[in-house]
Amino acid sequence: MVPDLAGVREYVGKLAVASNARRIVVLGLVLARELRLLEASLKPLEITTKPDMPRGTFFSTVKAADIGVSPAELAVAETGTVIIAASDESERLVTALPKIHVVVVPRSRLVSSLADAEPRISRFLAGASRGVVVSLISGPSKTADIGGMLVVGVHGPGELHVCLLDQELREES
Image 1 (cartoon, rainbow, N blue to C red):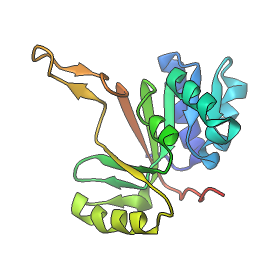
Image 2 (image 1 turned 120 degrees about the vertical axis):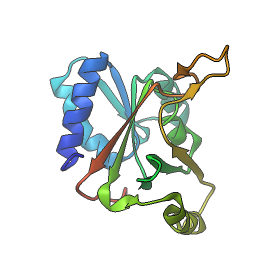
Image 3 (image 1 turned 60 degrees about the vertical axis):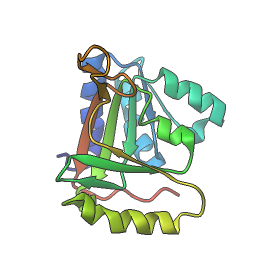
Image 4 (image 1 turned 135 degrees about the vertical axis):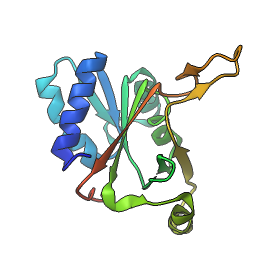
């Protein structure tokens, strides 16, 4: 639980130091604006967001990022699932390619169960003006397909961190 975006910035800064991260890619201008304050204090940390560059360059940046930070539409208490909607594939990759994924979700978007989430997801999809990919993420990627041994981070981040925020996130403009 973090009280505000400054708390998210502090958490991500500590995570960057602990993981020796050098590149962070952020979805959303509001989050990026707040996290860019880390660049001045944590050299040589580089923080990037999509509006900064063309799509192809952004894709290459996401592939090289150590930490991806994204907002979530909803979080489900029953399963620990975060629900993220992206209208562009490069945005979805922020949640899948970096070694560490940090999700920021306002506490007001926390629902009890997946059944409670369904009507909100349906309304969101019905209101979308173009195609949307909805991802339900319940933890770091893992598999036991190879010799029955559990391997974490095979098809996505090895770590998932959820910052439950006590304030609302402003809508992107």
